[in-house]
Length: 120
Length: 112
Image (cartoon, rainbow over all chains, first blue to last red):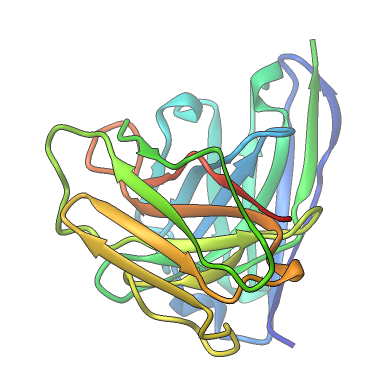
């Protein structure tokens, strides 16, 4: 089955760190750009970061630059998000998403998400 | 960061047609960027609904259709059904320097 499964979420204090993981299965993980997208409680979707197939390019939304690091291990079919210096405003469900490339990329496969709660 | 503005909510009776707009606010237009749409049923992850302005992935009913003109896009749902109650988001490339992708503000569709 083609799927993405996130893990690693939880309750942390402001300023602490957390590492999210996303396990991919059922498709050739190494040929896709991958992203993290988050959704604060009761709010809309916000793209957070993405990474190229070989890990050589990474992009971040301004609000997490310098604090979050995206990485991947193609041998393990896994995507990661290391989140440092967490803030209350980082509280959200974090989704792992596969990017599909046509002319402009979109997200054609999503995981179920993992909840990160940052307590101030 | 660019903003894609959607109406907060739309509603319709079963069988009716509803339309959701998605308008880019950035002054540098970005009219050549494709728009994609996602459906998020309550308590679930988003699901791709329309890609490249007007294409449906396999399995998406043809009741859903997309269109784009200039810096605005629309999602139409014809023959509205109870199971269409969900949040809908448009998404596109962000032509600012603060992000790579931008999602719309989201629209809740209510079936009366």
